[in-house]
Image (cartoon, rainbow, N blue to C red; front, side, top):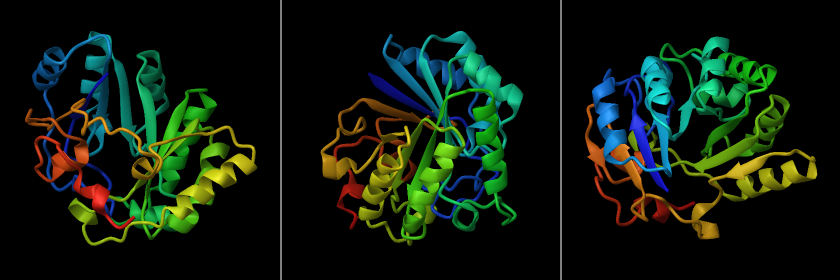
Length: 259
């Protein structure tokens, strides 16, 4: 399986305090010709294409055109604030899997993931999650875990389950971009949240958990991940390493973080 990560735009309507990509600080948008070239050069029956950014729904027309044109396993990781019923239904009909980013209840999520003007985004994210639940569209929640929200993970699990999410990904902070000076989490809080979910009887799948501790494989380190910037620069790396200019992954500097 090859993972092709297309950064559809560097633009973003949020200003997440830890964003490795520094979303919103530039206004670059990927063109159809750039995306077509990337997909066709790496196309196979096992190709997985992930749309990311910035905020990929700012370039929604490109998502739709690619999903209509190619047979691949598509997914989009979005902050959810721009998701409408029409877009949700269209993405579902096109087979594009949806991931929503949320870092906890409003008191912490609004601090970590504010709009560009500093206002909170949580209400709009929860609206999108409820929209997906009401339309019976499966989706997952991704939470970036930092020292700021590690004690709110059980509440995040409660929210994810109540709003109909099927899975939760806890991604430990990687100190890059705007997150360089933030403190990484104590992974015991992640373990506790997973145990809490099981004891609560929640039917939630957990992804990307404690990769280093569990010895899980990294697609980038195995040479199975390709990242393409909005301008078409191809990097054999994961999105985070690509954001700091590492074009080919041979080792991961973030695995040496004091997690």
